[in-house]
Length: 165
Image (cartoon, rainbow, N blue to C red; front, side):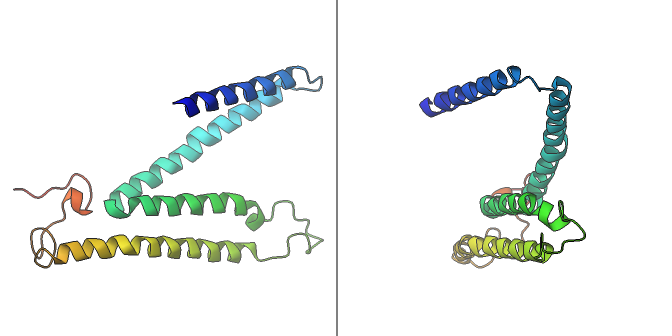
């Protein structure tokens, strides 16, 4: 609780410093600042949060519960890498007459790094999956309910789907 209070106080001080600096700047264009803040608000709340909620819903629907923390970390890492690398991939700032400004194949390199993140995520899920299968094999073969049983919500299947007793 103390850390939260300290972080809120530090944030409030930084915001106050930024507002005081902006108000004392003679070249400040308030309309431009308001347009920028509106763009940031729309970009974050409409575009970014809609994407995050959609990906979260897809993860909850298609990823077994036991793998969700690892897959979530992998997706967050992949998103961060993509956001950082996208301007290079798209070539923003590259003059057409100077090929030495951004000389590397950034699109290919991003694809390779994203594949490595996916592979690391799969490898990180492996011990959990092996432990889950070992636990299921100790109960008579195919886990709870025997062969052909539908997955239960706590068994890694889709949430809300429970076998009748």
